[in-house]
Length: 496
Image (cartoon, rainbow, N blue to C red; front, top):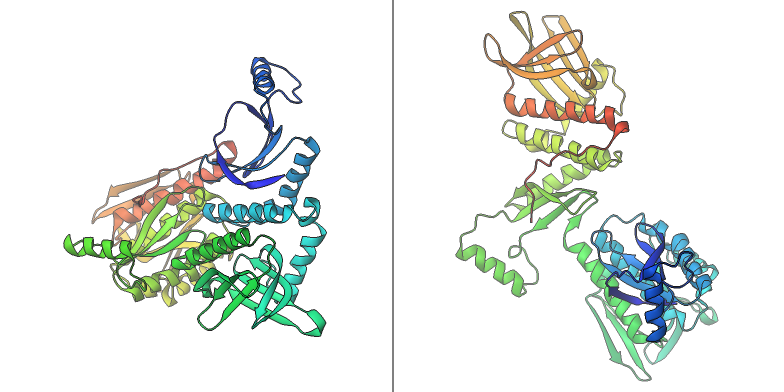
């Protein structure tokens, strides 16, 4: 049977039969063991002597970001635990695979298991997520015109109080919405409330029984006659808190926009006032806004932008959504995502002293990308990382032009006085990359198996060289990736 999620410690009294990234099916040692070792006999003896009333099988949920386990199901019968495990694989796993944030995964699992516990006393557990729940999900999407990616968490039979008259119907709780529908005697009532629009959620005594009152800025709603009002209220509260947490700061799969507590706070709680006081007394020179990059494979965060003005940070955030996100969504490997973000942010830092940040990826960069694909005949999916104004040294004569660095190629183009120079080098063909002193200034020498190239007159040669090195190492890593896994050190300062 399903049980309310209970945090437990892992012990050696259990052996694991099955596991996936989020759930573990375990068997109590001493039961159905093919090989009876000393540990098995010891556990069986302890259970017999002490007459322990411990179920033989159990399912645990493991948080994806920590070694923290919750008991969510237990039973004495193997066929029952198998049924629960099958239900998890069919109904839970596809949903969890579409959620990226560990806290969101944990919240969703807890709602779902608690909802199963609420309904299990009244329904045959085998039916909750089969025909009845599937039909309820279809009805939810159809009646309330919801998108298919809006996940239904649970639904309840209840009454909506309109004045002194209760209208029987169904309340549907999804990740973002609370909805009610009643269609008795041909009179329909349809209510759709976004959880983020709820300003209060409370239990109150009505004429007949206790109800749940939901208040938005414009309306009040009363719902009652739940089978287990307390548990229903707890689940509502959890989803509402989750929705509020999501709306506090803007975030996507890779980036988070945060605001320093104190400035621009609508509600000034104790923590807000404390932070504001500390900043004032200590004269802290801390920017009010910042953007963090989060590695997709770990809880590691890097500071990539900060500003005192809201409009400045909004401009940076918009740039990330328009320019960075479409590219990152096409990259599957976490290390590759991390490398690309580092190149891109470093190139912005390199150029920002010379260019207006709003122009880097607008007209000028768009034109550079078009020229890169056209001049060098590159496929559209070849991503341009950065380009530089520089000189190519042919003997003692420099030829001014532009150097283009993409994910896989280093290219140069010059068209002075009608004389064109076009160079295309695959990063995987480079055998050495070094800084040397030329006649006039320091240059970057690139050697392949057949040729040698010298480029100079960069605005910031050192940073340009570092970016070249990173892309070359990245290309080499991709080439060798079939032979093993690679991991490079992070170059951004970690944020706490």
